[in-house]
Amino acid sequence: MRKTARIVILGIAGIILGMQLFRPVRDNPPVRADIIAPPAVKALLRPACYDCHSNETRWPWYSHVNPAGWLLAGHVRDGRDALNFSDWDTLDVRKRYLLKRDILSSVEEESMPLPSYLLLHPDARLDSEDRAVIERWVTE
Image (cartoon, rainbow, N blue to C red; front, top):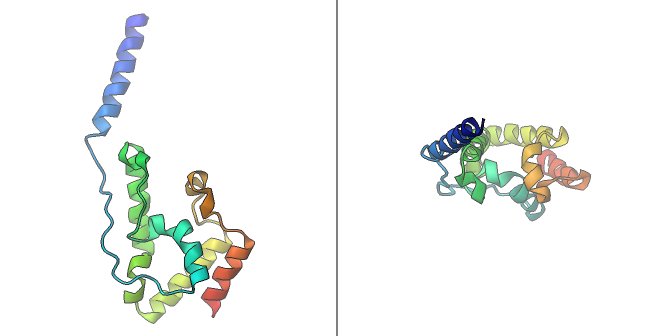
Protein backbone atom coordinates (compact mmCIF):
# COMPACT_ATOMS: atom_id res chain seq x y z
CA MET A 1 0.00 0.00 0.00
CA ARG A 2 2.76 2.37 0.91
CA LYS A 3 4.65 1.76 -2.34
CA THR A 4 1.46 2.34 -4.37
CA ALA A 5 0.79 5.65 -2.62
CA ARG A 6 4.37 6.75 -3.32
CA ILE A 7 4.01 5.87 -7.01
CA VAL A 8 0.70 7.79 -7.24
CA ILE A 9 2.20 10.86 -5.55
CA LEU A 10 5.27 10.77 -7.82
CA GLY A 11 3.01 10.35 -10.85
CA ILE A 12 0.89 13.35 -9.90
CA ALA A 13 4.01 15.43 -9.22
CA GLY A 14 5.41 14.40 -12.61
CA ILE A 15 2.21 15.45 -14.36
CA ILE A 16 2.17 18.82 -12.59
CA LEU A 17 5.85 19.42 -13.46
CA GLY A 18 5.23 18.33 -17.05
CA MET A 19 2.40 20.87 -17.35
CA GLN A 20 4.88 23.65 -16.67
CA LEU A 21 6.67 22.87 -19.94
CA PHE A 22 3.70 24.10 -22.00
CA ARG A 23 3.48 27.82 -21.34
CA PRO A 24 0.56 29.88 -22.56
CA VAL A 25 1.11 33.23 -24.26
CA ARG A 26 0.94 36.02 -21.67
CA ASP A 27 1.55 39.15 -23.66
CA ASN A 28 0.53 42.78 -23.49
CA PRO A 29 0.65 44.22 -27.01
CA PRO A 30 0.94 48.01 -27.31
CA VAL A 31 -2.14 50.10 -26.62
CA ARG A 32 -3.20 51.44 -30.01
CA ALA A 33 -6.11 53.71 -29.11
CA ASP A 34 -7.40 53.54 -25.55
CA ILE A 35 -11.01 54.32 -24.80
CA ILE A 36 -11.92 57.94 -24.37
CA ALA A 37 -14.41 58.13 -21.54
CA PRO A 38 -15.16 60.36 -18.58
CA PRO A 39 -12.74 59.86 -15.65
CA ALA A 40 -15.51 58.35 -13.49
CA VAL A 41 -16.19 55.69 -16.12
CA LYS A 42 -12.51 54.88 -16.68
CA ALA A 43 -12.05 54.61 -12.92
CA LEU A 44 -14.68 51.84 -12.93
CA LEU A 45 -13.54 50.09 -16.10
CA ARG A 46 -9.85 49.80 -15.17
CA PRO A 47 -10.18 47.55 -12.09
CA ALA A 48 -13.27 45.71 -13.31
CA CYS A 49 -12.50 45.13 -17.00
CA TYR A 50 -8.97 45.92 -18.13
CA ASP A 51 -7.28 42.71 -16.99
CA CYS A 52 -9.25 40.72 -19.59
CA HIS A 53 -10.45 43.43 -21.99
CA SER A 54 -7.32 45.46 -22.72
CA ASN A 55 -3.65 45.12 -23.56
CA GLU A 56 -2.84 46.25 -20.01
CA THR A 57 -3.38 42.91 -18.28
CA ARG A 58 -1.85 42.56 -14.84
CA TRP A 59 -0.56 38.97 -14.87
CA PRO A 60 -0.60 37.68 -11.26
CA TRP A 61 1.98 35.21 -9.98
CA TYR A 62 -0.40 32.26 -10.37
CA SER A 63 -0.68 32.96 -14.11
CA HIS A 64 2.84 31.48 -14.32
CA VAL A 65 1.70 28.15 -12.84
CA ASN A 66 -0.26 25.73 -14.99
CA PRO A 67 -3.09 24.81 -15.24
CA ALA A 68 -4.11 28.23 -13.81
CA GLY A 69 -1.94 29.93 -16.45
CA TRP A 70 -3.82 28.20 -19.27
CA LEU A 71 -7.16 29.21 -17.80
CA LEU A 72 -6.16 32.86 -17.33
CA ALA A 73 -4.53 33.17 -20.75
CA GLY A 74 -7.70 31.74 -22.32
CA HIS A 75 -9.91 34.20 -20.44
CA VAL A 76 -7.73 37.12 -21.53
CA ARG A 77 -7.61 35.95 -25.16
CA ASP A 78 -11.41 35.51 -25.25
CA GLY A 79 -11.94 38.83 -23.47
CA ARG A 80 -9.73 40.75 -25.88
CA ASP A 81 -11.42 39.09 -28.86
CA ALA A 82 -14.84 40.19 -27.61
CA LEU A 83 -13.86 43.70 -26.49
CA ASN A 84 -10.47 45.37 -26.28
CA PHE A 85 -10.39 48.83 -24.73
CA SER A 86 -6.83 49.24 -26.03
CA ASP A 87 -8.17 49.33 -29.60
CA TRP A 88 -11.41 51.18 -28.82
CA ASP A 89 -10.75 54.38 -30.69
CA THR A 90 -9.83 52.48 -33.87
CA LEU A 91 -13.39 51.09 -34.07
CA ASP A 92 -16.09 52.76 -36.11
CA VAL A 93 -18.86 54.62 -34.31
CA ARG A 94 -21.47 51.89 -34.88
CA LYS A 95 -19.22 49.16 -33.45
CA ARG A 96 -18.46 51.28 -30.37
CA TYR A 97 -22.18 51.91 -29.89
CA LEU A 98 -22.93 48.17 -30.04
CA LEU A 99 -20.10 47.36 -27.65
CA LYS A 100 -21.31 49.99 -25.18
CA ARG A 101 -24.75 48.36 -25.26
CA ASP A 102 -23.11 44.97 -24.61
CA ILE A 103 -21.13 46.45 -21.72
CA LEU A 104 -24.29 47.85 -20.17
CA SER A 105 -26.11 44.58 -20.61
CA SER A 106 -23.29 42.57 -19.01
CA VAL A 107 -23.01 45.00 -16.11
CA GLU A 108 -26.77 45.10 -15.49
CA GLU A 109 -27.01 41.30 -15.58
CA GLU A 110 -23.93 41.14 -13.33
CA SER A 111 -22.36 38.61 -15.69
CA MET A 112 -19.27 40.83 -15.85
CA PRO A 113 -16.85 40.94 -14.20
CA LEU A 114 -16.88 37.16 -14.00
CA PRO A 115 -17.70 35.78 -10.55
CA SER A 116 -14.43 33.81 -10.59
CA TYR A 117 -12.51 37.07 -11.20
CA LEU A 118 -14.30 38.78 -8.33
CA LEU A 119 -13.15 36.09 -5.89
CA LEU A 120 -9.56 37.27 -6.24
CA HIS A 121 -10.29 40.91 -7.15
CA PRO A 122 -13.02 42.22 -4.83
CA ASP A 123 -12.14 45.80 -5.83
CA ALA A 124 -13.59 44.99 -9.27
CA ARG A 125 -17.10 44.52 -7.89
CA LEU A 126 -19.58 47.06 -9.28
CA ASP A 127 -22.36 48.29 -7.01
CA SER A 128 -25.63 49.89 -8.11
CA GLU A 129 -24.08 53.39 -8.18
CA ASP A 130 -21.24 52.13 -10.38
CA ARG A 131 -23.72 50.49 -12.74
CA ALA A 132 -25.67 53.77 -12.91
CA VAL A 133 -22.51 55.66 -13.92
CA ILE A 134 -21.90 53.16 -16.72
CA GLU A 135 -25.54 53.35 -17.78
CA ARG A 136 -25.36 57.15 -18.06
CA TRP A 137 -22.18 56.86 -20.14
CA VAL A 138 -23.75 54.31 -22.49
CA THR A 139 -26.98 56.23 -22.97
CA GLU A 140 -25.48 59.72 -23.40
